[in-house]
Amino acid sequence: MIIKQLSIFLENRTGSLTGVTQLLGDAGINLSAFSLADSSDFGILRVILSDPEVAKALLTEKGYTVTLNDVVCLFVPNTPGTLSKALILLSENGVSIDYMYAFAMKDDMARVVIKPSSIERCIEVLQRSNLQLANANDMYDF
Amino acid sequence: MIWNESNECMGREEMRELQNRRLRETVERVYHNSTFYRSKMQELGVTPMDIESIDDLTKLPFTVKTDLRDNYPFGMFSAPMSEIVRLHASSGTTGKSIVAGYTRKDLTTWSEVMARTFAAGGCNRNDIFQIAYGYGLFTGGLGAHYGAELLGASVIPISAGNTEKQVQLMTDFGTTALCCTPSYALYLAEAIQEMGAKDKLKLKRGFFGAEPWTEEMRREIEDKLHIKAYDIFGLTEVIGPGVAYDCTEQHGMHINEDHFLPEIVDPVTLLPVEPGQVGELVFTTITKEGMPVIRYRTKDLTNLLYEECPCGRKTVRMNKIMGRSDDMMIIRGVNVFPSQIESVLLEFGEAAPHYHLYVDRENNTDTFDIHVEVRPENFTDDMTSMLNLSKRIEARINSVVGIHARVKLVEPRTIERSQGKAKRVTDNRKLY
Image 1: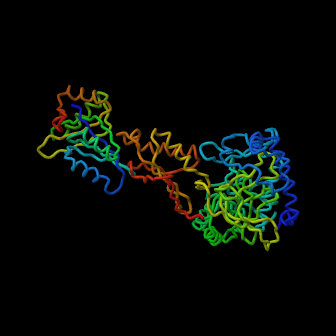
Image 2: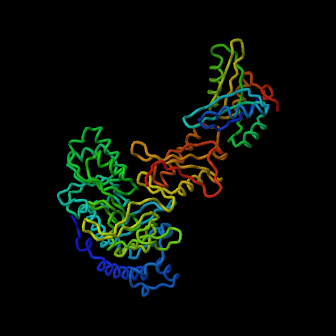
């Protein structure tokens, strides 16, 4: 249920992002989810990829500043109101959300990556309501 | 106008005699009242008996800024606290301030040398002085204030900042003489233009110092404000402003050498240079009681001019400062050492910080940008706290150094490493 996500510090300049993607691509690492949080001077790149520990070691060796964080990936049917229900559920049970990113195609289940204030509580609440959570090996090999 | 003809126009022989006597008195004073100077002299095996004339200066020890920092707060004084009536402070090389103490007689001396400064520019009791140097621990505001008051002028103690009010009072009060930093003068000039006040002003002269400025800047100030711009030189350790000043010839600043003995030494060997050669400016105070300094190394580079000045004054002149022999910068009037920045950055992580300082000038105001590499221990996935990190560093620098800097976090390994001593500063201001 716990998904490892890599966070990478990136300066706000041309080539910053492609530096990372090229490095990972050349090393045969596959990206499953990608989100870039930006500010005027720098950004935090958040990635879920096929080999989180390998990627972390590789990036650190090349001089990047990285941390590994725990997130969950929730599946919700791609219909109106489903996300709202899930979020209300979390809110009522004292789980707040630091950030999230999501995507869905028309006939697909929506995938919602959530960084909660408490990962254990979040998992507990969502599972209790029979909401489907991704397993780590749905996204990458351990 | 010459404020003190007998001293400012004293013949060289007579001046020498005066200096000899005053030097002997000062050496006696520090030897018997300052444990710092007594132990320094004992280390060299020198006693007051060995100092008969200014030729014996080279027997005496040097004093540097770190001596003042190490003896914070009052260890450099040669008078008991009951006789110290004023304290001023300015920044040292790291954290701690350097403190200056003045007796009543010192304040009289200070007013005297400042009155000479303003009279040399042609001011008198009919002038209205706007003192826009900061009042407070900084020596600029109060130093200029008491000098202008002694001169008999009408003094407006407005201090620095609040530009709109500066222009308003300048217009309403009919200010004739302006005292502030050269960069603030340019800033004021823009404001005056914008506020449409230019034709309403009665400004005639300005006395600018506390930071280095070029001939180009002087011309710009004179053009924009329609005034004569005079250079003044001083430093807290010696007295504050009032150490040297322009006369109407503006060909080097006259040093008040009846109070402050100048020397030029080679910054590496510390030996006196040939007359007229450029080197590091050193001062020995010969009338101060509270905190006399012996052979204080200013780290400013210049040369002395001995030829007679057409103005009639016979005091030796110093050229404009040409550079520094250390890495101190003056940013918006504040002394900033890279070592101070480094010590603040060290507070935020264990590893040695990799940083670069960028100093520039935008709209006549100095800008100060610090690029520092993110260290692993500082990085979290939390955007808010990462943004806060630069703000916290900025707050700390403001608190420790006294200046607002803009801190930018950069990726590791983006700041150039160097083999020897790192070049940490890029100063694009072209001040020298």
